[in-house]
Image 1 (cartoon, rainbow, N blue to C red):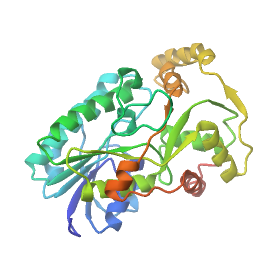
Image 2 (cartoon, rainbow, N blue to C red):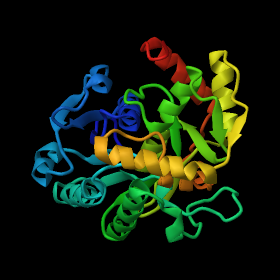
Image 3 (spheres, one colour):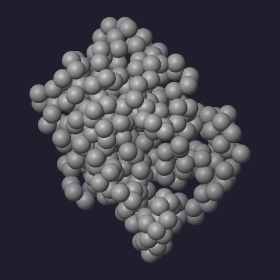
Image 4 (cartoon, helix red, strand yellow):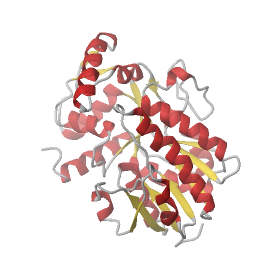
Length: 331
C-alpha cells in the first residue's frame, strides 16, 4: 500500500464511515467519499475530501465514483433496527453491495474491504465470546437488519473466492461523530441525560469507533483475501455500560432491571403504532428477542493477524460524551 493511493469510501456521511475516512486521510491515503442527494454533509465538512455522488440503489452511479481508485472501503449500509420497508433495506444492503463490489473489479480496483457486522455472525449458546468460526444458526438473525447483513456477508464471502475482498465485522461502535445518532449512540445519549432509569439483562461488545476505523485500514493492508475479521472491543453487560455512562456524566446509574418477556405486549403495540405513523418505535418484539442473547465477541483473530489493538470501552464512552457535549446534544 503506497501513500497517496486513491481510496473510495462509501458511507462517510455516517458514523463509522466518517471515522474510516478520517483514519485513511491520517494514514496518507488520497480519499474520495460518496454521498447521496439529501444526505447530511456534517461529517464531511472537516475532511475536505473529494465528494462524489453514489447511491447503492442506483448502480449506474458506481462507475464514475470508482474511476481511478486503487482501493474501495465499502462502509455504507442501511442500519436501522426497525424499517417499514424490508425490501428497500435488502436492496441496499445486499443487491447494492454486490453490484458495487463487482463494479469495483470492472473498474480495476485492486482490493476492497466490505464492512459487514457481528450481526452477521453466530453466537455461542452459553454467552461466551463468539468468534469468526462460531456456528451460525438462523435463530441468531432476528430482525430485518441482521437478516440482511447475514445474507449480504454470505454472498460477499462467495464473491471473495474470485475477487480480492476482505470482510470487516465491527461490533458496537461508540465515540465521536455520531450525528444521527445510531441506536447505541442514542442509548448512551439518553442515559447521560438521565432518561434511562432501567435496563434489560443483556450484553454487548463495545468498541471505540476510531478503533473500528483503524481496523479497516489494517484489513486493507494486512488482511487475507476472503477472510473475516471481528473488529470488537470490550464485552459488557448493559448495566455495566450504563454505569460507565453514569460515571462519565456525573449521574446515578440505573438500578432497575426489567424482565424481557413481560415487555413483549408493549413492544408489539409500539410496532403496530409505528406501522401506522412511520415513526421508529422505542421497542419492537425483534429488539427484545435480540436482548435475550449476549452479543459477546472475540477480536483475537484481528489482534493476532492484523495488529489490531482496541482501547477500553470507558474511553469510547468518554469520547462520545465529550463530542455530544461539544455539539450541544446533551442539553
